[in-house]
Length: 132
Image (tube, rainbow, N blue to C red; front, side, top):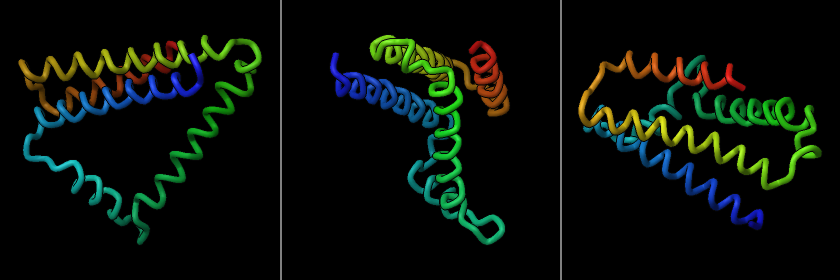
């Protein structure tokens, strides 16, 4: 597969995860408008600075640092082929999609309090990071 095919496949999986999350949020809070919530979050001021202008560069910086520590420093690009690297990435995305899909499906039958979902989110991400 060519690099464009790898990127498109990854984008399809991420879009599917975002779609499942949207369905989940609709089942949890049907009255919620995601666009207005995103705008309100971006414009929320803390210490006189809007959150979006502070958090977006921080996200980019954290992503770059993580890329250096987990990919460049161990030299994975020299040890593994492009296909193996993409398959590892797909595996992580598919696990994420399966977990989000499971939680979304469960939310149609049993609606837990929000704190339960928060604990599942924190516990799941912690377990995933410790597994690495």
